[in-house]
Image 1 (tube, rainbow, N blue to C red):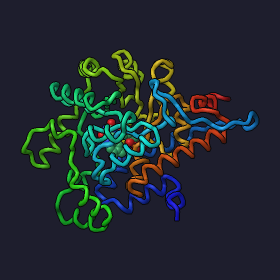
Image 2 (image 1 turned 90 degrees about the vertical axis):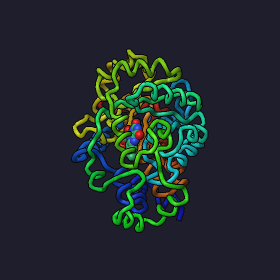
Image 3 (image 1 turned 180 degrees about the vertical axis):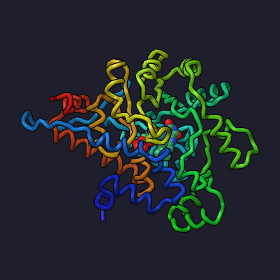
Image 4 (image 1 turned 120 degrees about the vertical axis):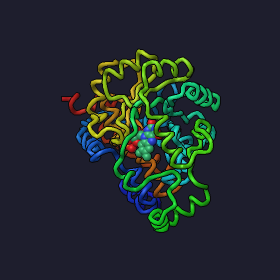
Length: 383
Ligand code: FNR
């Protein structure tokens, strides 16, 4: 059976991931904060966005190519940053970086990835961006930012939405740790997922490879986890953003924006782009959905500054919905992760193929020539 028949949509990718990934890692991936209302809200808000078809008109073929910051991409979507990737599926981010380069879409490498930022830059080429979690220690921030520039990154995504350590209930129940704690329950979960176990043995145990240079030596695993959580959970103050802005000569995008105030601050502090996100429902269960705040933020900052968005996007139709609401570019996290967990390396290429086809079909179906014309099809705007 072809890959497309087995895995035609994100539903099958997620189900494949559930079957192949041990429970502690799968729950880390799907889970959110609190009662996980935010995850449901992200989906239902997107599902409520309607697009108006214009069936009668000229004959045309939709053009999906889209530019951001003067760089041309094959489509207006990319891969959001995600940490602990190697725990979910070995070499996850490496597979996705290669596929993003082939598909010519951006991939954002997380500070918390289980590989080095240099390796992802080499695999992703110009399509690779780097995501920074600010560390409390200024000198470490400086060295981290300089290292990203030396590796060749041109775009830095500064995530601001983890001011405190969170308590995700599933992870607490599962005793999540990196690498997995060697106890009977973990062994049992791993035994039930042999493909994951074999791949993990081949790839070696997952570690925060990019962050290793910034942690004290000789810490036990538990101490390391606590140290990183503490060191990266800090308020990204105006001064901290100024410092990063001064250090980083490339493009700076601020991720985790939900309010017009933060959007304006970011703009005033010299950000080149804003990234509206509620972290996929993983930080604050009462956070608004990007769908609900995007139109207001767009109005507040005008057309001058590019707005990126993520959270809850699961297919090409959702990408079109976000663009119709005023986004310049759309990112997906879990959808890509599910695909690689379900299908391995080829899952990344397959996900990009399916998302592209879904977007192409959506544009064709509503009579829209290019992604930037999508706002004209938003039902609220058209009535
Ligand atoms: C994330 N996200 C995230 N964001 C970030 O800036 N740095 C990070 O290291 C991570 N890590 C991470 C791990 C996992 C497993 C997930 C699911 C998410 C948030 C991510 O970039 C993005 O905002 C959300 O994933 C978007 O929501 P969807 O597409 O997953 O619904």
